[in-house]
Length: 412
Ligand SMILES: Nc1ncnc2c1ncn2[C@@H]1O[C@H](COP(=O)(O)OP(=O)(O)O)[C@@H](O)[C@H]1O
Ligand SMILES: [Mg+2]
Image (cartoon, rainbow, N blue to C red; front, side, top):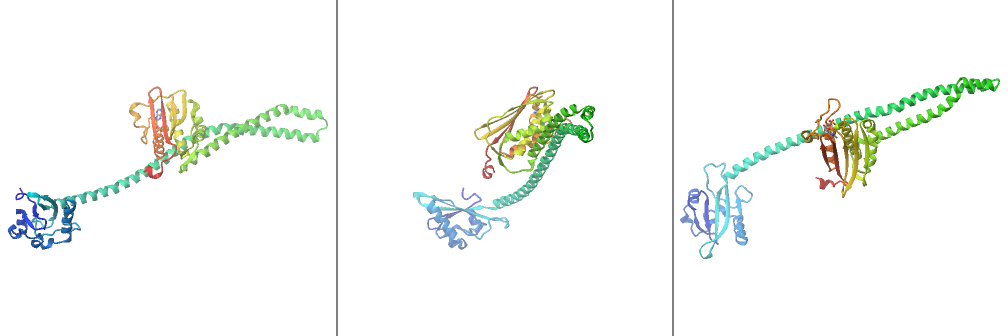
């Protein structure tokens, strides 16, 4: 068998003397085995007399290992000056050295000379492959960057859409109190003018009867009672405006990017205040808050999720329904959910709702970004979002968040 394989095989005894080599070696080296028999291999191939060869033999002797060396590597172990193959360029000698036992347990070494050309070719292919892989990786990284950019643009545009929606609601909410405060002010201005007339008249009046007549003419009694209620009403109206403005201010910490400990109930109340006008014609809002610790989060972003969920819930309700906002905590995880009694989500839409731009709403009403944005915020918080929906019965979105963020290392 050894004569017929196209591998070189040299058998050495313990003194590194040649005991046998196969036809392949004879052909390649132009030397006959008979000349070399019984003599140290390094006599026949002086070039092979290297430290490395001896070390390999030591290793094999000591540990029974099968050291494998390639000629192109730094360990130029065994150099045999012959052409393995006609093609010089791809010639490469790979050597494998292994011990074996002959008759009566005599130890021998087999030196096998392998055709390394295939490996060279494979290496070349590998190199080409890894180059194109690297190029693709760069391309992918560029793509990922673009995606990241697009994502942040998306977030930005959803924020704007959200703010637009919010602004409409807020304008509506503020319009009403501002309307009556300003009409009250006009009435008050008239009353004050009349009262000043009466006060001015005190100096010139000849008798109290004349004054009384003036008071009566200007309907002083009515002015008196109305002034109080006008002032009370205006104070109330301005109070409402102040409340909305404060909520807006709270909400608009949207650019905040830092994780902080926060009481998310507070944020939810603020958000509820803001979307109240949008909800009040569609649903009764029920709050079922549980016990929650402070949560490490970007509160403004959680508010944004709640706003999206609330607005979606309101949109899903056709006439008048019920929206329930619940919170709770289990071990190291806090959750909040928004449940509605709306029309539900069709099964075929269910796995698309987090896609950017997926919307079932008419142009102008839906951007299809609310849930996409919510999803990415939840991801950023290392949490998860769940949806339970039944067509005709309603939908419940639940968001789970870790109470403490895993540190950067764990997260990666
Ligand atoms: N509470 C819900 N009830 C029914 N359908 C919902 C609900 N929330 C979301 N959806 C569905 O998911 C789609 C995507 O929602 P979203 O990303 O907020 O975009 P948009 O509200 O602008 O359409 C909606 O168009 C709607 O079909
Ligand atoms: Mg929406």
